[in-house]
Amino acid sequence: MKVALEGVSPAQVVWSRLVLGALTLGLFVAARRDRLPRRLRVWGHMTVLALSFCVVPFLLFSWAQQHVTSGLASIYNATTPIMTAVMAWAVFRVERLKPVQIAGILVGVAGVMVIIAPWQGLDLSQSLLAQLAILGATACYGFSLAYMRRFVADSGMSALVFSFVNIGIAAVIMLALTPLVAATPVRVDLWIVLSLLALGCAGTGVAYIWNQNVLRAWGPTRTSTVTYITPVVGVALGIVLLGERLHWNEPAGAVLVFLGILLAQDRLRPRRRRRADAA
Image (tube, rainbow, N blue to C red; front, side, top):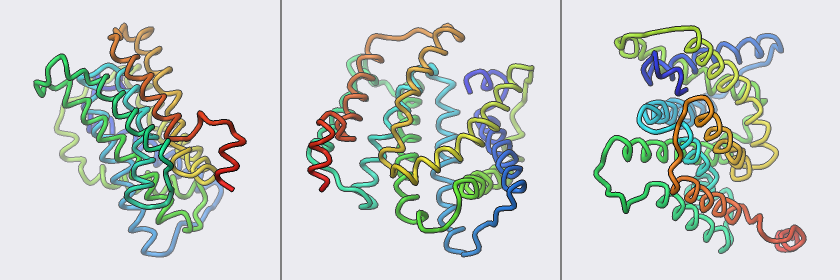
């Protein structure tokens, strides 16, 4: 995404990744001849998810990446499990949290505050606004994962069909906004094209099928733990390929975020005790 933003606007990045993702998923659906949902209620829920899981967070992330490093963005992305736990527990009531999990959420919030570094002064610069935008995007992801479990789990759609409908509706929304999106000049080279193809076909197409399979097997909170690997990859690629610098408070805050995630997932207790409590 960081490379793509060197030649196209944030909205154009989102337009490209959603359209390419929808086309990729559409080919899979056509090859398997899967049926699309027929109930109007399902399409209504999928429209909500198209906005909350795709359009809004994608726009927030794309805009924010202009003002923060890719490594910092990936660290913030790791707060998704905490956001999911809060939404699944407090908003949709699809999961129950134990005291240790609530403590984990608070530890994760403390980690976010360390990353924001309020002692440096909160002057509402674009960097701070960008960090808040990323947190808003992860909140959208948390909302969406819990919303799926609450309203769409019994829809009967396969992971492939769900992903296609979700990305497809989001792509239609962005296509409707094409006159606004196309107003910004575009500078395209080979690396930008390859970045958009990777982001759309792989990152927004194929990856969403896998994500839906995991969601159905693990539930919303555990599924969101796939973001564990994001900071490691994001920081490493940012330093090696983009020459980004890492400030001390970013990995320190990331450690607190990871600790909060482990607590929120109730992962620090022996497995036998967790099973006994569940029983």
